[in-house]
Length: 108
Image (cartoon, rainbow, N blue to C red; front, side):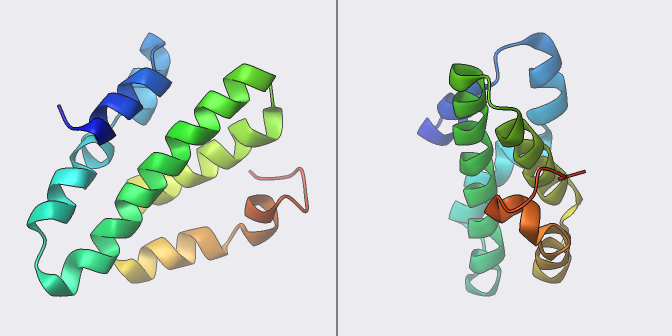
């Protein structure tokens, strides 16, 4: 198991979290980055970056009982789950800029 996968498994331990957040797309992101063609590397890197961000936000939200972090975590999860191309990934994240920058409490 790669360090990336270990971090995901450390952050998401509850059975419902594992089922919801640790999707095949999320778990395979690091391996897909390593084997990606040069043209696909930026997109695959963004997938790994979203997986890492989700892990960090999950840990922060649990340590501080921080509801805004949980909301942003869900936005990142949906972006990672729905993205099939760089364009879709960018559009998904661009739809929630205020939420991602902390200027609003409405992320959903």
